[in-house]
Image (cartoon, rainbow, N blue to C red; front, side):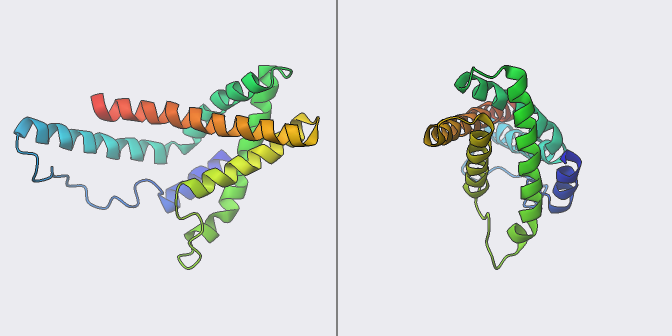
Length: 173
């Protein structure tokens, strides 16, 4: 499944497909040469980070699974961490399959499906809420509220963690 996602990303190029120009110039408002050089270096690191994510989507996805499983384990300690890892691997694999099947719809300009970053995140949150709610069983409304909250927290934690790493790379090289 990860190979299929990587193949689709190599065709669509979701991160670097928008960056056609490789010549980076600092805005005219930056007058000092040292500041201009720092600005250009930061933009170049941002482009390299985007390219790295695009080429290694499988690694990024695999890296998110242990952290997501940890967040879910903090919410549901009655299951051990290994069970959460297995559940998150299955959830991630199925979600990537669904995303891959929806990709032609997302690429159709007339449909404008998944035009922003939050739409796939919303679909992922709803899917994880439903699927993990089924996985844990128990009281029907409470299990979906809990799994939905855990899904939101896990997405926020992963966003903060990965975004923080990217920020540190761009800022400090």
